[in-house]
Length: 401
View 1 (cartoon, rainbow, N blue to C red):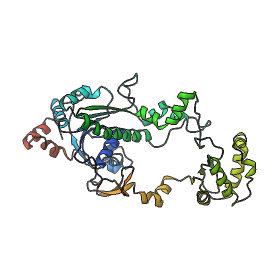
View 2: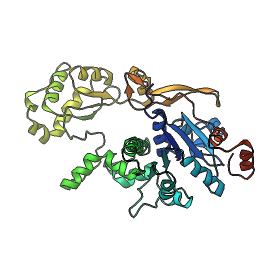
View 3: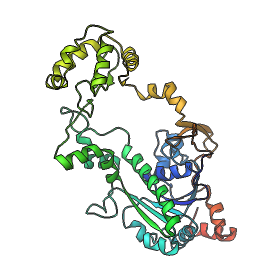
View 4: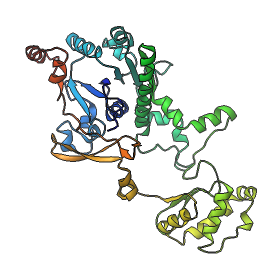
């Protein structure tokens, strides 16, 4: 079992996607993650999935995706006693993660200074849309808004379609992974220097880093990217998307070696004048003509046959797959990125993601199902010295559920 964070305790005051996905990575690595949820419906994702029957149980699919191996407690943090309970928990954890708008944690009495004053060896991680400083710091945002603001959308789509967002909320998930990476890095620093550390992770920052090549090129040369459609970032005339008898196929023949390999592959199908296109300069100057010749050959074969053929000649290529097609393939199953976990509270098995790498040829996947809302409130609070009579009183006062 690869559990390098065993013994590390995390207090998780996050909701929706980026924050919970961050703490999910920590839980998969063995940390004890205690998730604080409100008294109403808890994390919004509990009612945010596609399956309405699960939403009615506060176990929506959006929640189930990223909350296995965690504990759930319900506290009214707006009450004075609720805040006191949270601070008592903070004294006993190694990591505190929040993803509220800057300033909101401070209003609750759970800001950086409040927390670091009572735990001088804590890692305090704030995840937000724009970071803890700068003129936009107080704004809220969601994945698609940040996609638009970062410039990513002006590089997708085509001149005809205009800006197009990436379908998956990939900035949310990338920000979660970025935050988890920051936290794991900080653990060693805290051990060495014996002092608390504040981490500031921003969705906008993460989105810029996801297109580091474009941002760097622009800052250094003034180059401005335009919509690339389905063409390769390299701009190589021998790369990009082509239509076939079945589905479109994408290939990459960026250098001369790959181009010559592509020519050899094409000459097993029909006649292709390799000598005519041997010069890279000619290929670039007559790109439209070259692509037309490629297209005339590709349209005679199926994408499935072309994918096999081109890869046989060491030309990276793959047909466009639908999501059902992609996850049905042996490669997806062999990598075991998703594994079934039995969730008794909803009486079903459910596929959840594991961590994004293998260790000693094995996947790192969760063992415990996502918790029901407030499932661990009593156990967690009893562990910090609150007895059953006190728990009953706190429930009556509306401090906990």
